[in-house]
Length: 362
Ligand SMILES: *Cc1c(COP(=O)(O)O)cnc(C)c1O
Image (cartoon, rainbow, N blue to C red; front, side, top):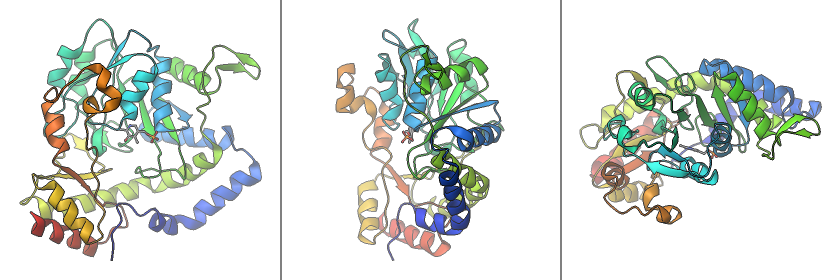
């Protein structure tokens, strides 16, 4: 039997009655844009993150743009992030007119290396954006210490419910952005995202920017965006949020099973002692990556590379003038990483089958 990378149908079947009722309720109430479903989700997601405010957005990408715009990031500024992330992180820095400045990552976690951060800061640095890659929060204490007054925006698109010394994304930086892309651990049935923060003034500004710069129905403070969260997605997310902690426990159990069975043959993910890793992706590293991926594919098992080309080597960032060797850790890992199928409904037998194929391929 083929094993998909993710099985959203199995998840839907488990919660179908609740989801269908929530969708019907949105249609009956016609609260399609913003409205009470969006407000209810914002309130419960803020509570889930342990912060005072959540501002709904139309995607994780637009959530990043909202945070940068509200912090005043613009032409002439620099914003520091990592090269091994989904392009949206750097792309939204570029869209503001600022320049993305990359720092390399730590080999153990593949998250921003605080030891390399200081050298990247200049008088133009307007924000620092650590990415909580694969579901493990970056080493935030040293990052915040080095950042001092510079605002830190956490890209938490892969870190719903992840913890660092008991804190969730949004409790540490000035703001954190989450994505609810369907394939994320908390996924909508379309595009959706959110920015969370404890900064009330920043939250108000982001709400204004997400809604055409509105301060009244036909009063516009500044030309801005339509980045609103829609009611249908919010209602679906409210249903799913109630199940999130249960799903995360099951993900963690399956990740631990993989690690037990694979750790002698490949490099398995390292969970830091102070972290609660939620394994948005279960990523192994091996020098035989392409062979392993091909062997899995032959058996109908879907394994994916997040991400094959670091951003500083992408055509989109050619103008930054980087070359191979600039970020050696990010470059080396790009040739070794492989994300295995992982979801709450993945069965023990399927894990065993995947492991057997990997063991015989290496
Ligand atoms: C998914 C993702 C995004 C973008 O989120 P969308 O909702 O797809 O726009 C941004 N950053 C990271 C690290 C992501 O994984």
